[in-house]
Length: 342
Image (cartoon, rainbow, N blue to C red):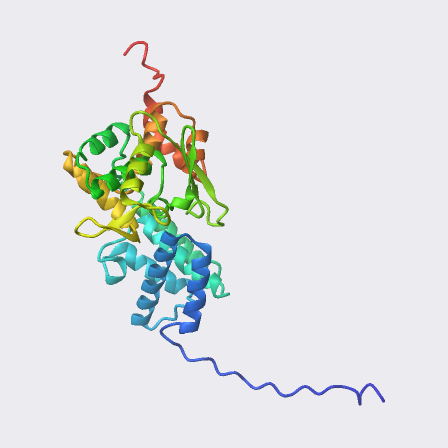
């Protein structure tokens, strides 16, 4: 057979009509995105990304833009709007630099989870990048409102103000002291289970199976010293024994009548407890949040001369740089250059 007669004839190619523009992604696409987000992120990040992605797709729907894949121009228009004016998609107010960057991160993550090129790497991404630099510069001068850390003195004031012996009092004392002495994130604190606690001659060891800083789920151990001032171990044991908790979540919701339930506290509940108990002893509750407990440990550790490496080991921060703000003010006055003549 000659080469000419053995040639394969290809079928004629039929032009493909582009799919019509749709306002929303399909439920299957959305499910795949949500599944990858859930596998790759901590619980709080999952909620944030899911919410951020929904807001972006809703914004696209109102304007007839395609959210997946989104062009750099569409992403830039969305971010510029929520940075500049208060809308439904920005909780009614211009958003902070960190919030805008998180919205962009959610868009990028959704595209990658769906196997699509994100707007940040497409042709024309230079405009989006330049706009984000402009947003960072514009918002750089806006000082972020920081919450007051519940350091050792503040925490002792708050705990001493809890004078009762009700189940609520016992739980809150344990929650506050453990939260501060473990430098726990709210999400870590409410997920502590009885099975995660191991006794130690000097206190307790708490295993955190999964956290924001350990998204691979390797597990981290936190040493809780008993001490003689804050006494987190004593307060924790008093709560667990009184509540008759033998397994499952340690910090639980109570009914209005003070009965212990099987449901773990929410992350928001931690902030509410901190605010309520701070207000009860005369502090302005607006200055406190759930993060005040974690910040309180780091502030106190820096004040008393703990090294950044030991602080990082205990707080489980990914980098030393993230801890610098907790020690900067104290270091500024330690061995001051004017010590000899001021």
